[in-house]
Amino acid sequence: MIILLLWIVVVSALTLMGSWYAKRYNQPDFLIVLFAVFTVFSNLAASKIATFHFGSADFFAPAVVLIFSVTFLLTDIVNEKFGRRETHRMIFITFFAHVAVAIFSWLILSLPAAPFWTDQKALSSIIGLVPRIILASWIAFLVSENLDAYIYDLFKRITKGKHLWMRNAFSSLPSMIVDSILFVTIAFWGIQPVKPIIVGLIVIKWLVGIIDIPFMYLNRFILYKK
Image (cartoon, rainbow, N blue to C red; front, side):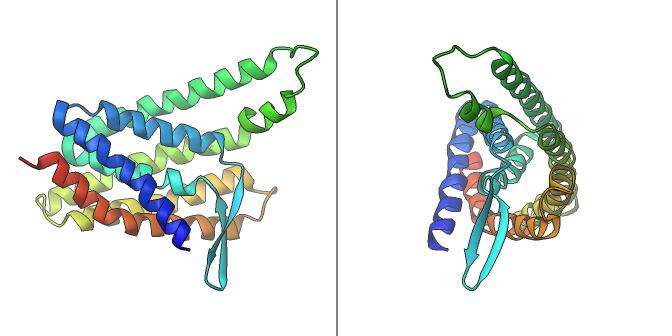
């Protein structure tokens, strides 16, 4: 449990450098790069289902949930500093990065291996993306991340820029539910037990979302400090 919390803190802390860059150069470039790296890697490694121990309870979810969940924090940071339009631009840029990685992966795997090279199977297990997982991740990504951007912007206008924790939590938590249900249902229906994976994903994502609330304040402090 302690190691799990430590990993969440470490991954979330990476966003602070993106905020420093955004403050220093008034550009979201670094945040976009982080967002793309987090989501593309999550797409590549989404097939591994891990066990997460919480005392006497065990939850099952793709191992990359610890990384992908932080993308909702990145979405909120960009939305806070640069607005919803820039956030949607970041999401669609990253979506095309997903497409490019999938095409490159198929290209590399389709080339015939040298007769003395025996790692084709190992490489395929790493970058041989299952079509269902690709489709699931693309649909869930586009729907959930854009939903997060809309809800965050809505709460920001309703609260007139106040109550940062409220728009951070109330945009990320429902978006995480939508992402979990869409991804697991499309990717694993008929292959893996869907219900426990959905429950595990939501629990871990909410844990990350709660831990990320202080990081949202830290990032805003960096973005707006004089």
